[in-house]
Length: 192
Image (tube, rainbow, N blue to C red; front, side, top):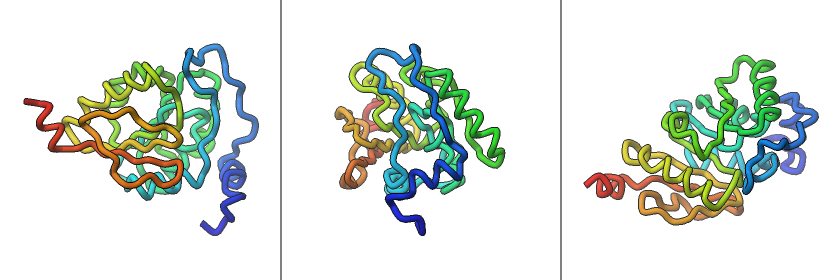
């Protein structure tokens, strides 16, 4: 917090040793958003508003080079899983985790809209505009069974979620950030 807000993104990139970012490749699906790192201030607000703890499993949907996953791990101690479909970005993220072996970050090369087994491990899910439309609908459908078994949180930056009966806005949006929380009563009602 001592680093001025206008310098935080560059400072974190230097600390993490992130230099050149690979170009987006042909694996980026139609409707997928090219890699763009989330602003550090949004990640700091996410950690606070979603209440990310060391006991959580933080899932970064569209992890890119692993920047957000690494920062959340360092800030909270939460185990983190990055989901990324582009092989060059996965390699860059794995390079980051190799340089910082104290990180508890696992990066999986997978289409997040088809990753229900990996998603099942999470308690906090982060979306910085990875995709919208049918792909987003499919991801939310994959999160619903998880929300029936336990409370989950979904943090979104610049991405309003389509309404679902199993989650609600947890707190008023903080600028570009919205945090949703699964609703236990609704989850129980859906089981009937």
